[in-house]
Image 1 (cartoon, rainbow, N blue to C red):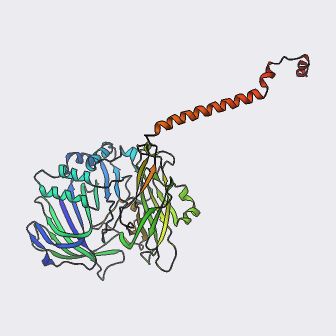
Image 2 (image 1 turned 90 degrees about the vertical axis):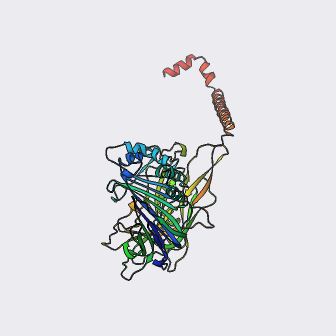
Image 3 (image 1 turned 120 degrees about the horizontal axis):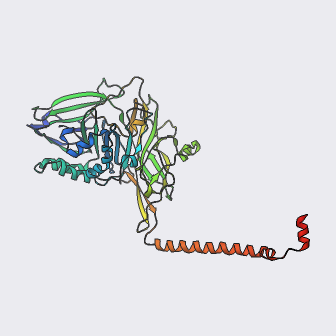
Amino acid sequence: MRERITFIQKLGDSLEPSSLKINGGVISGPEVKAVREDRVTLALEELPTELQSLLKGVHELHIRWISPEPYESVSPLLARLPPGFHLFFTPGKGDHTASNKLCSTLSEIFGHVNCSTPAESFTSLPSDRFSHSTAFQYYQPLETLSGFVQYAKHQLCSGSDSSCTARADTLAKASSLDISYDTISHALKVTTLWPYQRQPIHATSRPWSRTEVGVLSADKPATLDAHELGISGLLTVLGQDSKPSVTMFTFASRHRDAESAFSTKILEPVGLHPTLQIQLESNKPPATDAYCSPHAYFTLPKGIFADKYQLGDDLFLASKNLTALRYISQPVDLEAPEYVMKGWGSAVLLQLTPPKSDKAQPWTAEIPLHLRYLEPNRGGYETIEVPYPAVFWACTAEEGTKFPNNPFERVNLGYDGLFGPRTVFWHVEPRPLGGGQLQNAIRVPVLDLDKSAWVNIGTAVAVLVGFAWVAWRLAAVYLSSGYGNEAAAPVTEAGKEKKRQ
């Protein structure tokens, strides 16, 4: 087991080495304003038996949970996703056991996960674009990590380890949780991020693990290349170092800060075809020496969807400040009600069209959406939460630029596999107007079960009355036409002669 605890401050902040106290396997220091990232790396044999058996049949598994609460981050921890529970998965070859057990195991770990099997609930990711994408994707709204906290306390912590239990409780205030496994490393990485806020420096090592603690801040050395980020600060290996070591290093990064914000809202009137408006602070590209275009990446639960045919009309897109629909997961049934769908929903990547201007200015883009018929309930209304999208500028790096993995790299985000390997993502921070969560609530009318009996009776009466009216009108036409009298009249000799002619 290896553990890395990192406090990352903003550019210009720093900490004197003398302010850190190291006593054996414990480090402590003053309260600082920083982002905290904890990463634990576990070998396969260190995991519970049920997890070992599951992961042995998996080629790749990446879980990304994002809090619906707004949070501020700092460079280089800038990669974002829509709030909720995201899963990216590639099964092992020839072994379907892991696939069939995956959803039930996820429910045990995170609480109620709504999938049944990957074949029914997951959507396929495109394999014809870039090789760094997984095979399948799953998403569902999940507001808290309460299920995972309980699993960690009872399954991953021993009863006598109070420090482990206390650390598990801190997950309730985390902004994001990443869990990744692949067959190449045969190791499970669990990364937790807490937002930029004041927090004390304190960490304790374990006898059977290697614990590294860093108190770092963003830096801009003179030798920094355009595609690189700089970090400097103090590093300490607990139980090994008696004092912190000063360090500074640079690395290439695909995720950067656009230094702007956005918010979203549902336009009135809502109806069954709501429009989501994205309000952006600036139309100015973050990089002037590269081609850049703004994008919005959505993960829409199955109760709401985007129509790819509507988003294929260039004139319609231009009227909404949209350039093109770059990706939508398939299939998306345009008619099915929500309660008969087995898939999780749909992922959508839209390229936006900023207004052309010499000066930076705020602007908006509008995305038309469509609600499905929801399951009847008592009360006649249901609420759908539409999560904020991830908004970013995708810019091209110079020819020959490479982005190898860095210590803070975050990959398998869904949208990164839809771009080339030289794409740099400049992230726009979601910042709801007036506070609130990173989701928009829509109140949807549904069939009220308390009143449905009258609907059934009324429908039956309407059908009977309609049938009686149609039968009466047919009988009236039949009788008024005289066909009945003509049929009963005898045929005369003149008539017979006329027929023979």
